[in-house]
Length: 562
Image (cartoon, rainbow, N blue to C red; front, side, top):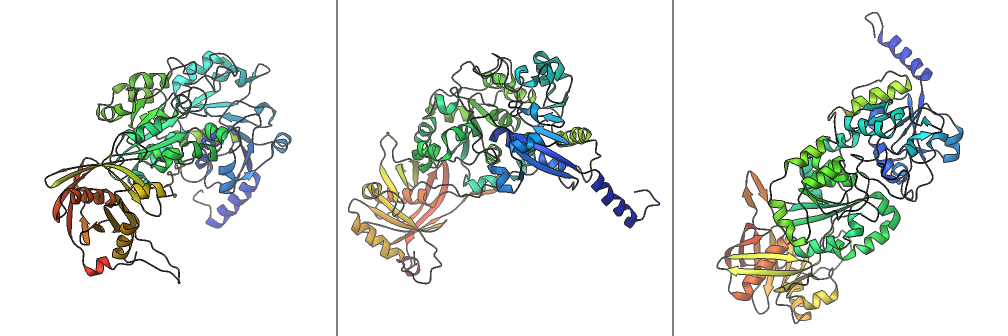
Protein backbone atom coordinates (compact mmCIF):
# COMPACT_ATOMS: atom_id res chain seq x y z
CA UNK A 1 0.00 0.00 0.00
CA UNK A 2 1.37 3.41 -0.95
CA UNK A 3 0.89 6.47 1.20
CA UNK A 4 -1.94 7.63 -1.07
CA UNK A 5 -3.94 4.39 -0.88
CA UNK A 6 -6.97 4.15 1.37
CA UNK A 7 -7.54 0.89 3.27
CA UNK A 8 -10.84 0.38 1.42
CA UNK A 9 -9.37 0.83 -2.06
CA UNK A 10 -6.35 -1.35 -1.23
CA UNK A 11 -8.60 -4.13 0.11
CA UNK A 12 -10.74 -4.00 -3.03
CA UNK A 13 -7.67 -4.16 -5.25
CA UNK A 14 -6.30 -7.12 -3.29
CA UNK A 15 -9.60 -9.00 -3.65
CA UNK A 16 -9.65 -8.43 -7.38
CA UNK A 17 -5.99 -9.45 -7.62
CA UNK A 18 -6.72 -12.67 -5.73
CA UNK A 19 -9.35 -13.61 -8.29
CA UNK A 20 -6.96 -12.88 -11.16
CA UNK A 21 -4.02 -14.80 -9.68
CA UNK A 22 -5.64 -17.93 -8.22
CA UNK A 23 -3.42 -21.00 -8.54
CA UNK A 24 -3.97 -24.73 -8.04
CA UNK A 25 -1.15 -26.75 -6.49
CA UNK A 26 -1.25 -30.53 -6.81
CA UNK A 27 0.59 -32.59 -4.20
CA UNK A 28 1.38 -35.92 -5.89
CA UNK A 29 2.23 -38.76 -3.49
CA UNK A 30 3.17 -42.31 -4.38
CA UNK A 31 3.37 -43.67 -0.83
CA UNK A 32 2.62 -42.69 2.75
CA UNK A 33 6.26 -41.69 3.24
CA UNK A 34 6.14 -39.26 0.31
CA UNK A 35 2.80 -37.89 1.44
CA UNK A 36 4.07 -37.17 4.95
CA UNK A 37 6.98 -35.23 3.46
CA UNK A 38 4.57 -33.16 1.39
CA UNK A 39 2.39 -32.36 4.39
CA UNK A 40 5.42 -30.74 6.02
CA UNK A 41 5.60 -28.35 3.03
CA UNK A 42 2.05 -27.02 3.52
CA UNK A 43 3.01 -24.13 5.87
CA UNK A 44 4.67 -22.51 2.84
CA UNK A 45 1.18 -21.67 1.52
CA UNK A 46 -0.50 -20.98 4.88
CA UNK A 47 -2.79 -17.95 4.90
CA UNK A 48 -2.88 -17.57 1.10
CA UNK A 49 -6.45 -17.78 -0.21
CA UNK A 50 -5.17 -17.65 -3.78
CA UNK A 51 -3.86 -21.22 -3.49
CA UNK A 52 -6.10 -24.25 -3.99
CA UNK A 53 -4.43 -27.37 -2.58
CA UNK A 54 -5.22 -30.74 -4.13
CA UNK A 55 -3.79 -34.22 -3.57
CA UNK A 56 -3.51 -37.23 -5.83
CA UNK A 57 -2.15 -40.75 -5.44
CA UNK A 58 0.47 -41.68 -8.03
CA UNK A 59 -0.20 -45.33 -8.90
CA UNK A 60 2.36 -48.09 -9.09
CA UNK A 61 3.58 -48.53 -5.52
CA UNK A 62 2.82 -51.63 -3.50
CA UNK A 63 2.91 -49.40 -0.41
CA UNK A 64 0.06 -47.03 -1.31
CA UNK A 65 -2.59 -48.59 0.96
CA UNK A 66 -2.41 -45.87 3.62
CA UNK A 67 -1.01 -43.06 1.48
CA UNK A 68 -4.02 -40.71 1.57
CA UNK A 69 -5.36 -41.57 5.02
CA UNK A 70 -3.80 -38.48 6.61
CA UNK A 71 -5.22 -36.20 3.89
CA UNK A 72 -8.71 -37.65 4.22
CA UNK A 73 -8.52 -37.34 7.99
CA UNK A 74 -7.65 -33.67 7.64
CA UNK A 75 -10.41 -33.05 5.09
CA UNK A 76 -8.06 -32.37 2.16
CA UNK A 77 -9.45 -32.47 -1.39
CA UNK A 78 -8.23 -35.42 -3.45
CA UNK A 79 -8.16 -35.81 -7.23
CA UNK A 80 -8.36 -39.27 -8.88
CA UNK A 81 -5.30 -40.10 -10.94
CA UNK A 82 -7.25 -40.21 -14.20
CA UNK A 83 -8.58 -36.71 -13.67
CA UNK A 84 -5.19 -35.48 -12.48
CA UNK A 85 -3.77 -36.59 -15.83
CA UNK A 86 -6.50 -34.77 -17.73
CA UNK A 87 -6.28 -31.44 -15.88
CA UNK A 88 -3.51 -28.86 -15.91
CA UNK A 89 -2.06 -27.56 -12.62
CA UNK A 90 -0.09 -24.43 -11.92
CA UNK A 91 2.37 -26.36 -9.75
CA UNK A 92 2.93 -30.02 -8.94
CA UNK A 93 4.89 -30.90 -5.81
CA UNK A 94 6.18 -34.45 -5.28
CA UNK A 95 8.60 -36.14 -2.90
CA UNK A 96 9.47 -39.16 -5.01
CA UNK A 97 10.55 -39.21 -8.67
CA UNK A 98 8.98 -42.62 -9.23
CA UNK A 99 5.73 -43.22 -11.06
CA UNK A 100 4.33 -41.56 -14.15
CA UNK A 101 4.92 -37.97 -13.01
CA UNK A 102 5.76 -36.96 -16.58
CA UNK A 103 2.13 -37.62 -17.56
CA UNK A 104 0.95 -34.79 -15.30
CA UNK A 105 0.53 -31.35 -16.87
CA UNK A 106 2.20 -28.56 -14.96
CA UNK A 107 5.47 -27.37 -13.45
CA UNK A 108 6.96 -30.06 -11.22
CA UNK A 109 8.98 -29.36 -8.07
CA UNK A 110 10.65 -32.43 -6.57
CA UNK A 111 11.75 -32.86 -2.96
CA UNK A 112 13.64 -35.78 -1.37
CA UNK A 113 11.45 -38.42 0.26
CA UNK A 114 13.91 -38.89 3.14
CA UNK A 115 17.18 -37.57 4.50
CA UNK A 116 20.64 -38.10 3.08
CA UNK A 117 19.99 -40.32 0.02
CA UNK A 118 21.71 -43.20 1.82
CA UNK A 119 19.88 -46.20 0.42
CA UNK A 120 19.83 -48.04 -2.89
CA UNK A 121 17.24 -50.62 -3.91
CA UNK A 122 19.10 -53.40 -5.76
CA UNK A 123 16.05 -54.68 -7.64
CA UNK A 124 14.74 -51.30 -8.76
CA UNK A 125 16.09 -48.79 -11.27
CA UNK A 126 19.82 -48.39 -11.86
CA UNK A 127 22.11 -50.76 -9.94
CA UNK A 128 23.83 -48.92 -7.10
CA UNK A 129 22.05 -45.59 -7.65
CA UNK A 130 20.75 -43.87 -4.52
CA UNK A 131 16.98 -44.06 -4.25
CA UNK A 132 15.75 -40.61 -5.21
CA UNK A 133 18.79 -39.77 -7.38
CA UNK A 134 18.37 -42.46 -10.01
CA UNK A 135 18.46 -41.06 -13.58
CA UNK A 136 16.08 -43.83 -14.58
CA UNK A 137 13.37 -41.86 -12.75
CA UNK A 138 14.70 -38.29 -13.04
CA UNK A 139 14.63 -38.28 -16.86
CA UNK A 140 11.88 -39.06 -19.36
CA UNK A 141 12.86 -39.31 -23.01
CA UNK A 142 16.24 -37.79 -22.15
CA UNK A 143 14.66 -34.66 -20.63
CA UNK A 144 14.42 -33.77 -16.97
CA UNK A 145 11.02 -34.42 -15.41
CA UNK A 146 11.25 -31.77 -12.68
CA UNK A 147 11.59 -28.04 -13.22
CA UNK A 148 13.19 -27.72 -9.81
CA UNK A 149 14.96 -30.11 -7.42
CA UNK A 150 14.66 -28.75 -3.89
CA UNK A 151 17.44 -30.38 -1.88
CA UNK A 152 18.57 -30.27 1.74
CA UNK A 153 22.37 -29.94 1.39
CA UNK A 154 24.96 -28.89 -1.23
CA UNK A 155 26.44 -32.40 -1.08
CA UNK A 156 23.17 -33.66 -2.55
CA UNK A 157 23.57 -31.34 -5.53
CA UNK A 158 27.03 -32.82 -6.13
CA UNK A 159 25.65 -36.33 -6.03
CA UNK A 160 22.74 -35.38 -8.27
CA UNK A 161 25.23 -33.98 -10.80
CA UNK A 162 27.02 -37.33 -10.86
CA UNK A 163 23.71 -39.04 -11.65
CA UNK A 164 22.23 -36.44 -14.00
CA UNK A 165 23.94 -33.14 -14.91
CA UNK A 166 20.69 -31.97 -16.52
CA UNK A 167 18.75 -32.43 -13.28
CA UNK A 168 21.52 -30.87 -11.17
CA UNK A 169 21.30 -27.72 -13.27
CA UNK A 170 17.79 -27.32 -11.88
CA UNK A 171 18.73 -27.99 -8.24
CA UNK A 172 18.46 -25.52 -5.38
CA UNK A 173 19.47 -26.08 -1.74
CA UNK A 174 16.58 -25.09 0.54
CA UNK A 175 17.07 -27.31 3.58
CA UNK A 176 14.71 -29.91 5.02
CA UNK A 177 11.14 -28.92 6.03
CA UNK A 178 10.71 -32.03 8.17
CA UNK A 179 13.78 -31.16 10.21
CA UNK A 180 12.38 -27.63 10.63
CA UNK A 181 9.29 -29.13 12.21
CA UNK A 182 11.37 -31.25 14.57
CA UNK A 183 13.52 -28.30 15.60
CA UNK A 184 10.43 -26.14 16.15
CA UNK A 185 9.07 -28.79 18.53
CA UNK A 186 12.08 -29.19 20.84
CA UNK A 187 10.55 -26.80 23.36
CA UNK A 188 7.56 -29.16 23.69
CA UNK A 189 9.70 -32.10 24.77
CA UNK A 190 8.46 -32.16 28.36
CA UNK A 191 4.85 -32.22 27.13
CA UNK A 192 5.58 -35.11 24.79
CA UNK A 193 7.27 -37.13 27.52
CA UNK A 194 4.42 -36.43 29.94
CA UNK A 195 1.87 -37.69 27.39
CA UNK A 196 3.97 -40.82 26.84
CA UNK A 197 4.21 -41.46 30.59
CA UNK A 198 8.00 -41.46 30.31
CA UNK A 199 8.81 -39.63 33.53
CA UNK A 200 12.49 -39.81 34.42
CA UNK A 201 13.00 -43.02 32.48
CA UNK A 202 15.24 -43.21 29.43
CA UNK A 203 13.15 -43.37 26.27
CA UNK A 204 14.86 -45.55 23.65
CA UNK A 205 13.40 -45.55 20.13
CA UNK A 206 13.96 -48.44 17.73
CA UNK A 207 13.95 -47.04 14.18
CA UNK A 208 13.31 -49.53 11.38
CA UNK A 209 13.27 -48.84 7.66
CA UNK A 210 11.54 -51.30 5.33
CA UNK A 211 12.70 -54.28 3.30
CA UNK A 212 14.87 -57.32 3.83
CA UNK A 213 17.73 -55.38 5.46
CA UNK A 214 15.54 -53.50 7.93
CA UNK A 215 15.75 -53.82 11.69
CA UNK A 216 12.37 -55.55 11.78
CA UNK A 217 13.48 -58.07 9.15
CA UNK A 218 17.01 -58.73 10.42
CA UNK A 219 16.38 -58.57 14.18
CA UNK A 220 12.64 -59.15 14.61
CA UNK A 221 12.91 -60.06 18.31
CA UNK A 222 15.09 -57.12 19.37
CA UNK A 223 12.21 -55.21 20.98
CA UNK A 224 11.23 -58.26 23.03
CA UNK A 225 14.84 -58.90 24.01
CA UNK A 226 15.32 -55.32 25.17
CA UNK A 227 12.07 -55.33 27.15
CA UNK A 228 13.15 -58.53 28.87
CA UNK A 229 16.58 -57.13 29.67
CA UNK A 230 15.85 -53.54 30.72
CA UNK A 231 14.03 -52.77 34.00
CA UNK A 232 10.75 -51.10 33.02
CA UNK A 233 11.12 -48.43 35.73
CA UNK A 234 14.41 -47.25 34.24
CA UNK A 235 13.66 -47.47 30.52
CA UNK A 236 10.79 -46.97 28.11
CA UNK A 237 10.93 -48.52 24.64
CA UNK A 238 9.28 -47.36 21.41
CA UNK A 239 9.25 -48.58 17.83
CA UNK A 240 9.17 -46.35 14.75
CA UNK A 241 8.33 -48.57 11.79
CA UNK A 242 8.65 -47.23 8.23
CA UNK A 243 5.23 -46.56 6.65
CA UNK A 244 6.07 -49.04 3.87
CA UNK A 245 6.45 -51.77 6.47
CA UNK A 246 3.11 -50.86 8.00
CA UNK A 247 1.53 -50.80 4.56
CA UNK A 248 2.99 -54.19 3.63
CA UNK A 249 2.06 -55.95 6.86
CA UNK A 250 -1.04 -53.97 7.76
CA UNK A 251 -1.41 -52.33 11.17
CA UNK A 252 -3.40 -55.30 12.48
CA UNK A 253 -0.75 -57.90 11.59
CA UNK A 254 2.02 -55.66 12.91
CA UNK A 255 0.25 -55.29 16.25
CA UNK A 256 -0.35 -59.04 16.41
CA UNK A 257 3.33 -59.67 15.73
CA UNK A 258 4.38 -57.20 18.41
CA UNK A 259 1.62 -58.27 20.83
CA UNK A 260 3.81 -59.49 23.75
CA UNK A 261 6.04 -56.41 23.49
CA UNK A 262 3.06 -54.06 23.31
CA UNK A 263 1.54 -55.64 26.41
CA UNK A 264 4.88 -55.13 28.15
CA UNK A 265 4.76 -51.38 27.42
CA UNK A 266 6.29 -50.98 23.93
CA UNK A 267 5.10 -47.78 22.25
CA UNK A 268 4.28 -48.13 18.55
CA UNK A 269 2.45 -44.97 17.42
CA UNK A 270 1.31 -44.10 13.92
CA UNK A 271 3.59 -43.20 11.02
CA UNK A 272 2.83 -39.54 10.21
CA UNK A 273 3.93 -36.96 12.76
CA UNK A 274 4.01 -39.47 15.62
CA UNK A 275 7.45 -40.83 14.75
CA UNK A 276 8.90 -37.33 14.86
CA UNK A 277 7.27 -36.65 18.22
CA UNK A 278 9.02 -39.74 19.55
CA UNK A 279 12.39 -38.51 18.26
CA UNK A 280 11.99 -35.21 20.09
CA UNK A 281 10.99 -37.04 23.27
CA UNK A 282 13.69 -39.71 22.98
CA UNK A 283 16.99 -40.06 24.82
CA UNK A 284 18.48 -42.46 22.26
CA UNK A 285 17.72 -44.13 18.94
CA UNK A 286 18.70 -47.67 17.95
CA UNK A 287 18.72 -47.78 14.17
CA UNK A 288 19.31 -49.69 10.98
CA UNK A 289 20.33 -47.81 7.80
CA UNK A 290 17.07 -45.85 7.49
CA UNK A 291 17.33 -42.08 7.39
CA UNK A 292 15.19 -41.49 10.50
CA UNK A 293 18.35 -41.68 12.60
CA UNK A 294 19.83 -38.66 10.79
CA UNK A 295 17.01 -36.55 12.20
CA UNK A 296 17.76 -37.93 15.66
CA UNK A 297 21.43 -37.04 15.23
CA UNK A 298 20.48 -33.52 14.12
CA UNK A 299 18.50 -33.17 17.38
CA UNK A 300 21.56 -34.20 19.37
CA UNK A 301 20.14 -37.56 20.35
CA UNK A 302 22.40 -40.52 21.03
CA UNK A 303 22.42 -42.94 18.07
CA UNK A 304 23.23 -46.65 18.40
CA UNK A 305 23.76 -48.79 15.30
CA UNK A 306 21.98 -52.12 14.83
CA UNK A 307 22.49 -52.63 11.10
CA UNK A 308 23.82 -56.03 10.07
CA UNK A 309 25.03 -54.88 6.66
CA UNK A 310 23.95 -55.69 3.12
CA UNK A 311 23.68 -54.20 -0.36
CA UNK A 312 21.41 -51.24 0.36
CA UNK A 313 23.58 -48.76 2.29
CA UNK A 314 25.32 -46.24 0.00
CA UNK A 315 29.05 -45.99 0.91
CA UNK A 316 30.14 -42.47 1.75
CA UNK A 317 26.59 -41.22 2.39
CA UNK A 318 25.74 -39.31 5.59
CA UNK A 319 23.90 -42.40 6.82
CA UNK A 320 26.99 -44.55 6.25
CA UNK A 321 29.09 -42.03 8.18
CA UNK A 322 26.54 -41.98 11.00
CA UNK A 323 26.55 -45.76 11.37
CA UNK A 324 30.35 -45.83 11.27
CA UNK A 325 30.57 -43.20 14.02
CA UNK A 326 27.91 -44.73 16.28
CA UNK A 327 28.47 -47.53 18.81
CA UNK A 328 27.01 -50.87 17.77
CA UNK A 329 24.45 -52.93 19.68
CA UNK A 330 25.09 -56.64 19.31
CA UNK A 331 23.14 -57.90 22.36
CA UNK A 332 20.29 -56.41 24.40
CA UNK A 333 22.32 -56.54 27.61
CA UNK A 334 24.82 -54.05 26.18
CA UNK A 335 22.39 -51.17 25.87
CA UNK A 336 22.75 -49.58 29.36
CA UNK A 337 26.52 -49.29 28.96
CA UNK A 338 26.15 -47.84 25.44
CA UNK A 339 23.70 -45.25 26.73
CA UNK A 340 26.23 -44.09 29.32
CA UNK A 341 29.19 -43.79 26.93
CA UNK A 342 30.15 -40.39 25.46
CA UNK A 343 28.50 -39.42 22.17
CA UNK A 344 31.11 -39.71 19.37
CA UNK A 345 31.75 -36.44 17.50
CA UNK A 346 31.10 -38.12 14.17
CA UNK A 347 27.37 -38.35 14.99
CA UNK A 348 26.86 -34.61 14.74
CA UNK A 349 29.15 -34.39 11.71
CA UNK A 350 27.01 -36.94 9.85
CA UNK A 351 23.90 -34.86 10.51
CA UNK A 352 25.72 -31.71 9.34
CA UNK A 353 26.47 -33.50 6.06
CA UNK A 354 22.75 -34.17 5.52
CA UNK A 355 21.08 -30.92 6.54
CA UNK A 356 21.94 -27.34 5.57
CA UNK A 357 20.00 -24.07 5.82
CA UNK A 358 18.64 -24.98 9.25
CA UNK A 359 15.99 -22.56 10.39
CA UNK A 360 15.48 -21.23 6.86
CA UNK A 361 13.97 -24.16 4.96
CA UNK A 362 10.37 -22.97 4.84
CA UNK A 363 11.32 -19.42 3.85
CA UNK A 364 13.56 -20.73 1.05
CA UNK A 365 10.92 -23.21 -0.06
CA UNK A 366 8.33 -20.46 -0.21
CA UNK A 367 10.63 -18.33 -2.33
CA UNK A 368 11.21 -21.16 -4.81
CA UNK A 369 7.63 -22.43 -5.01
CA UNK A 370 6.07 -19.00 -5.37
CA UNK A 371 8.68 -18.24 -8.02
CA UNK A 372 7.50 -21.27 -9.97
CA UNK A 373 3.92 -20.05 -9.53
CA UNK A 374 4.94 -16.56 -10.68
CA UNK A 375 3.26 -15.11 -7.62
CA UNK A 376 4.46 -12.83 -4.85
CA UNK A 377 4.02 -14.47 -1.41
CA UNK A 378 1.52 -12.88 0.95
CA UNK A 379 1.30 -12.84 4.73
CA UNK A 380 3.94 -13.35 7.40
CA UNK A 381 6.90 -15.73 6.99
CA UNK A 382 5.88 -19.41 7.20
CA UNK A 383 6.23 -21.17 10.52
CA UNK A 384 6.61 -24.95 10.93
CA UNK A 385 3.68 -26.62 12.66
CA UNK A 386 4.76 -28.04 16.05
CA UNK A 387 4.41 -31.78 16.32
CA UNK A 388 1.27 -33.06 18.04
CA UNK A 389 1.14 -34.44 21.56
CA UNK A 390 0.22 -38.10 21.22
CA UNK A 391 -3.44 -38.36 22.22
CA UNK A 392 -3.64 -42.09 22.87
CA UNK A 393 -2.44 -42.93 26.39
CA UNK A 394 0.36 -45.49 26.58
CA UNK A 395 -0.52 -49.06 27.41
CA UNK A 396 0.39 -49.89 31.00
CA UNK A 397 1.60 -53.45 31.66
CA UNK A 398 -0.74 -55.44 33.90
CA UNK A 399 1.77 -57.97 35.27
CA UNK A 400 5.41 -57.87 36.28
CA UNK A 401 8.15 -60.28 37.25
CA UNK A 402 9.69 -58.52 40.24
CA UNK A 403 13.05 -58.76 41.91
CA UNK A 404 13.32 -56.88 45.19
CA UNK A 405 16.26 -56.68 47.57
CA UNK A 406 15.76 -55.57 51.18
CA UNK A 407 18.81 -54.06 52.84
CA UNK A 408 17.92 -52.39 56.13
CA UNK A 409 15.62 -49.47 55.41
CA UNK A 410 16.30 -49.60 51.69
CA UNK A 411 14.35 -51.78 49.22
CA UNK A 412 15.57 -51.96 45.62
CA UNK A 413 12.95 -52.98 43.07
CA UNK A 414 13.36 -54.11 39.46
CA UNK A 415 10.31 -54.98 37.35
CA UNK A 416 10.31 -56.87 34.08
CA UNK A 417 7.68 -58.47 31.81
CA UNK A 418 6.23 -61.66 33.31
CA UNK A 419 7.51 -63.77 30.40
CA UNK A 420 11.13 -62.92 31.12
CA UNK A 421 13.18 -66.13 31.33
CA UNK A 422 15.41 -65.00 34.20
CA UNK A 423 14.15 -65.95 37.68
CA UNK A 424 12.15 -63.43 39.71
CA UNK A 425 11.35 -63.18 43.39
CA UNK A 426 7.61 -62.76 42.87
CA UNK A 427 4.93 -61.91 40.33
CA UNK A 428 2.79 -58.79 40.69
CA UNK A 429 -0.49 -58.62 38.74
CA UNK A 430 -3.35 -56.17 38.31
CA UNK A 431 -6.45 -58.17 39.13
CA UNK A 432 -9.17 -57.83 36.49
CA UNK A 433 -6.69 -56.60 33.86
CA UNK A 434 -3.94 -59.24 33.85
CA UNK A 435 -4.78 -62.71 32.64
CA UNK A 436 -6.15 -65.14 35.18
CA UNK A 437 -3.04 -67.31 34.96
CA UNK A 438 -0.93 -64.39 36.16
CA UNK A 439 -3.48 -63.44 38.82
CA UNK A 440 -3.50 -66.96 40.27
CA UNK A 441 0.32 -67.04 40.31
CA UNK A 442 0.82 -63.57 41.78
CA UNK A 443 2.38 -63.04 45.18
CA UNK A 444 1.11 -59.45 44.99
CA UNK A 445 -2.30 -58.50 43.60
CA UNK A 446 -3.36 -54.91 43.12
CA UNK A 447 -5.98 -52.75 41.47
CA UNK A 448 -6.54 -49.05 40.80
CA UNK A 449 -9.47 -46.92 41.88
CA UNK A 450 -12.11 -46.89 39.16
CA UNK A 451 -13.94 -43.69 38.35
CA UNK A 452 -17.40 -44.36 36.94
CA UNK A 453 -20.18 -41.90 36.29
CA UNK A 454 -22.84 -44.60 36.02
CA UNK A 455 -25.98 -43.96 38.06
CA UNK A 456 -26.38 -47.63 39.04
CA UNK A 457 -23.17 -49.19 40.27
CA UNK A 458 -21.70 -51.35 42.99
CA UNK A 459 -18.28 -50.53 44.42
CA UNK A 460 -15.96 -52.36 46.77
CA UNK A 461 -14.36 -50.62 49.67
CA UNK A 462 -10.58 -50.83 49.60
CA UNK A 463 -10.54 -53.16 52.60
CA UNK A 464 -13.39 -55.26 51.20
CA UNK A 465 -11.67 -55.81 47.88
CA UNK A 466 -8.37 -56.67 49.59
CA UNK A 467 -10.05 -59.27 51.83
CA UNK A 468 -11.83 -60.85 48.85
CA UNK A 469 -8.68 -60.88 46.72
CA UNK A 470 -6.72 -62.67 49.44
CA UNK A 471 -9.57 -65.17 49.98
CA UNK A 472 -9.93 -65.93 46.27
CA UNK A 473 -6.20 -66.26 45.61
CA UNK A 474 -4.61 -68.55 48.23
CA UNK A 475 -1.12 -68.07 46.76
CA UNK A 476 -1.28 -64.29 47.11
CA UNK A 477 0.61 -62.88 50.09
CA UNK A 478 -0.30 -59.17 49.74
CA UNK A 479 -3.10 -57.24 48.06
CA UNK A 480 -3.32 -53.49 47.58
CA UNK A 481 -5.45 -50.74 46.06
CA UNK A 482 -3.81 -47.71 44.44
CA UNK A 483 -5.95 -44.78 45.62
CA UNK A 484 -3.83 -42.04 44.01
CA UNK A 485 -0.33 -41.52 42.61
CA UNK A 486 0.99 -41.13 46.16
CA UNK A 487 -1.33 -43.31 48.30
CA UNK A 488 -1.93 -47.08 48.44
CA UNK A 489 -3.97 -49.18 50.87
CA UNK A 490 -2.64 -52.71 51.35
CA UNK A 491 -2.68 -55.71 53.62
CA UNK A 492 -0.37 -58.68 53.93
CA UNK A 493 -2.07 -61.98 54.66
CA UNK A 494 -2.75 -62.19 58.38
CA UNK A 495 -1.76 -58.57 58.97
CA UNK A 496 -3.58 -55.26 59.51
CA UNK A 497 -4.69 -52.77 56.87
CA UNK A 498 -1.83 -50.42 56.04
CA UNK A 499 -1.43 -47.23 54.07
CA UNK A 500 1.58 -46.46 51.91
CA UNK A 501 2.55 -42.84 51.34
CA UNK A 502 4.91 -42.29 48.43
CA UNK A 503 6.86 -39.06 48.10
CA UNK A 504 8.59 -37.57 45.05
CA UNK A 505 12.32 -37.30 44.65
CA UNK A 506 13.45 -33.67 44.61
CA UNK A 507 16.52 -33.17 42.43
CA UNK A 508 17.86 -30.44 40.16
CA UNK A 509 14.87 -28.18 40.69
CA UNK A 510 12.41 -30.90 39.64
CA UNK A 511 10.14 -33.37 41.39
CA UNK A 512 10.42 -36.90 40.02
CA UNK A 513 7.50 -39.23 40.62
CA UNK A 514 7.50 -42.99 40.21
CA UNK A 515 4.79 -45.61 39.72
CA UNK A 516 3.02 -46.30 43.05
CA UNK A 517 2.79 -49.97 42.02
CA UNK A 518 6.60 -50.11 42.12
CA UNK A 519 6.50 -48.72 45.68
CA UNK A 520 3.82 -51.30 46.52
CA UNK A 521 6.18 -54.02 45.27
CA UNK A 522 8.86 -52.63 47.62
CA UNK A 523 6.40 -52.67 50.56
CA UNK A 524 5.40 -56.25 49.76
CA UNK A 525 9.04 -57.37 49.76
CA UNK A 526 9.62 -55.55 53.06
CA UNK A 527 6.56 -57.14 54.69
CA UNK A 528 7.64 -60.60 53.54
CA UNK A 529 10.87 -60.12 55.48
CA UNK A 530 9.47 -57.99 58.30
CA UNK A 531 5.71 -58.48 58.91
CA UNK A 532 5.87 -55.60 61.40
CA UNK A 533 7.72 -53.38 58.89
CA UNK A 534 5.73 -50.18 59.37
CA UNK A 535 7.67 -46.94 59.36
CA UNK A 536 9.72 -44.97 56.88
CA UNK A 537 11.95 -46.60 54.29
CA UNK A 538 13.44 -45.88 50.87
CA UNK A 539 12.20 -47.56 47.71
CA UNK A 540 14.89 -47.55 45.02
CA UNK A 541 13.02 -47.63 41.70
CA UNK A 542 14.75 -47.15 38.37
CA UNK A 543 17.96 -46.49 40.30
CA UNK A 544 16.40 -43.53 42.15
CA UNK A 545 15.56 -43.36 45.88
CA UNK A 546 11.97 -42.46 46.75
CA UNK A 547 10.77 -41.78 50.31
CA UNK A 548 8.03 -44.14 51.52
CA UNK A 549 6.09 -44.28 54.77
CA UNK A 550 4.17 -47.42 55.72
CA UNK A 551 1.63 -46.93 58.51
CA UNK A 552 -1.73 -48.17 59.78
CA UNK A 553 -4.56 -47.24 57.41
CA UNK A 554 -7.25 -44.92 58.65
CA UNK A 555 -10.90 -45.98 58.60
CA UNK A 556 -11.51 -43.46 55.82
CA UNK A 557 -8.72 -44.94 53.67
CA UNK A 558 -9.83 -48.53 54.24
CA UNK A 559 -13.43 -47.56 53.50
CA UNK A 560 -12.72 -45.71 50.24
CA UNK A 561 -14.92 -46.85 47.36
CA UNK A 562 -12.84 -48.48 44.66
